[in-house]
Length: 470
Ligand SMILES: [Zn+2]
Image 1 (cartoon, rainbow, N blue to C red):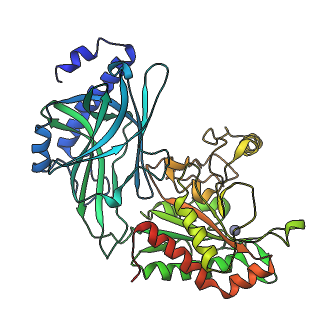
Image 2 (image 1 turned 180 degrees about the vertical axis):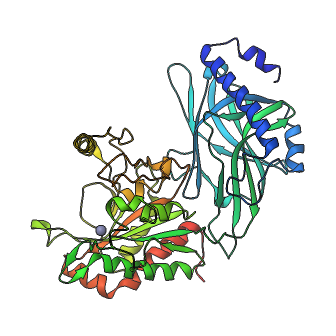
Image 3 (image 1 turned 90 degrees about the horizontal axis):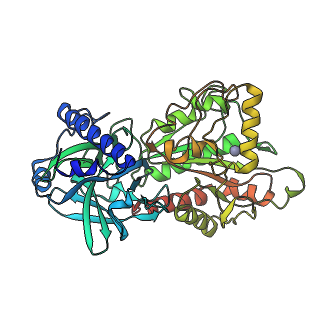
């Protein structure tokens, strides 16, 4: 342990606890690195130590403070790495800002500005983005070996510090989205590196070219309903048949862009296997998506409504996860409306932009979920808050990023649990309501203009991922 540690422990109790955790993490991780257990949880080629180049760069770090930064939240959602954490502000009375530094093995640094706030006790809270789908885009990082440092600007001084993790976060093996037939494997893990300032706990990132394994995909398409559940029905048209038809056409379109696509169902699945509580069990649509290694998931649906709104309800909707940057969803909605002969849905409930929606549980939903828990005799899910994402295909495929919670206590969910609910890797998931099959104009357009709809959606996805159409 370096000399700083002795001064460090005499401060406040909170700081002492932090220091003890850091010391423990440093010792355990140093041993773990030696044993090679931190990296490569599912990787064939575990990265157990920094490359010689990074080791040289790390030995040059003589001015790095031994971790004043504690990372409290860490996940990969879609293709972004999201970090949150805190710093005891006592050391930084004139704190002004903080940046995340990616130090590469060639000595270069990339700085990412952090979103920071400070409470009355001086603790600084930071996050890589205010959005769950923002932060550090893993697809945009170059190949190489990186360590994550933080730069704290305090008055006239700049302090470099490494970061420890509050929890034993699992390592992540992330495959980048396929571009020009190529992929990179991004290995993320908390470790301890020997530097010129002593052994420092830090988040390490190793990126190398790699072939996409057979069971890893870019995108999941979930054709809504099926396996005995027809969804909406109107004049002999079943939503479950339309969703399969659209999902298959969209799959073809995305594959022509070089993307690898997994479907949650093909239309030949057994009754009851995909819907309701079975969605979370083995082979259910949630599990299929969660195990796909894909970065995005799109659930395709068609709307219907009864009562007096039946004649006026129409148009396109895309539902986003709560806490997400909606610019991508907005471009999907705009593209569809511009080229597929339809309109934005006039529905105001949950709307955040024309055609773009974020539906959460809200106050009533939370109360309702408590009532259901009581009636079935299990503890209410404390994970359900007013701003918890309502649609399960968005929420349950996102892991910790979206507050997935199905844990198998409930008869309502068939006592099935979502085994990926605590995962630090989540799919960025959207639910698309193409149009209203109970509206004659929408229905005619849906039946005759499918290719325009799917081409508009695929074009927005290509633009988001930086893929140019062939
Ligand atoms: Zn539906």
